[in-house]
Length: 368
Image (cartoon, rainbow, N blue to C red; front, side, top):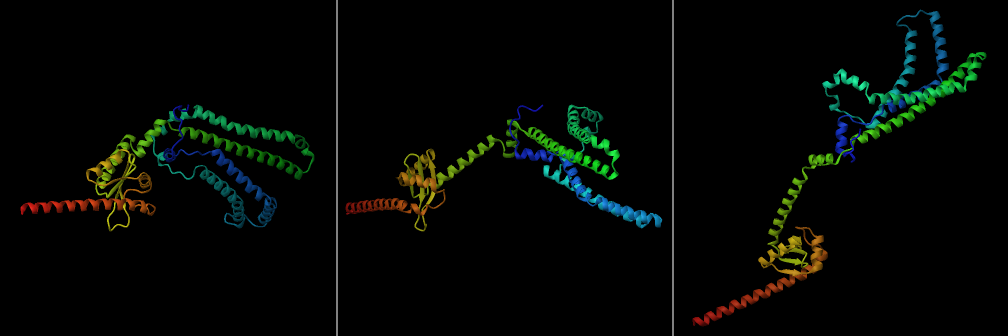
């Protein structure tokens, strides 16, 4: 009975593990039916010239046997073996090749060392008897009886259809009798082969459906597999948190080297650094909400200019990564801000210089 908790489809890893154990959907009936169809096709193609060929061969053999003695190493046995191999080998090769191809098409080549490992319980006669008389074995036997019943019904129906011809065959010559029997057998064979092919296809679909049901996983199985492959989610979340904190500290440290901080003013903050030897300003830090507030605190603490420009702040935050230069489309807007900052800094330095000069003059006057 299937486990009701297993409602999720199997993951690729779970399927690969089942494949390593040898759990591959394969129908022996399908391989057998296809190989029988291949053998029948080869026999049909070769049978067109079989009667005249073998008639000539046996006539020649009888003539040779009447004139020469039959010896173990003589030509009679040699040519007989050659003719037998000529007709047997194509049939065997066709059946074997189609059977191998059908097996590979169903599940590919599977090497399962785990399935070949020695298990003492396999040698327990009680377990073997239990398997022989289990419901699964009974269902297999009943399943095999279905195509057998259909084939038996086809044979009975064919004989019943030709019953009048069979009863009157005692009054015809041998050729007409052989033709009648061959037509009846051919009809039974191709209908039986069609039944076996259809049943083999149905059997494969049933096995595939059962295999998919056995491979299904529960939600707990999915969680356990995720822990094995990707690690514990709690540990991963803790690692991601530590990484975010580390990047945040590095970004705030880099913000100390900024030339200007462009703000939204509430949600966005982008720290830019520019020196004379740089081709373009570089984004050294950027943040949103709480991190933006931290960047502005660093700027205020170190007297780094903070400029409010909502469109520019949003454009820089969304289009430029930390450590990259700004795009050429934003050169003009950033240059205007830098010019204002440099002018303001120049005025401040001039005022400071004038103030220091005034102080020095007053000091000299007092000394005089």
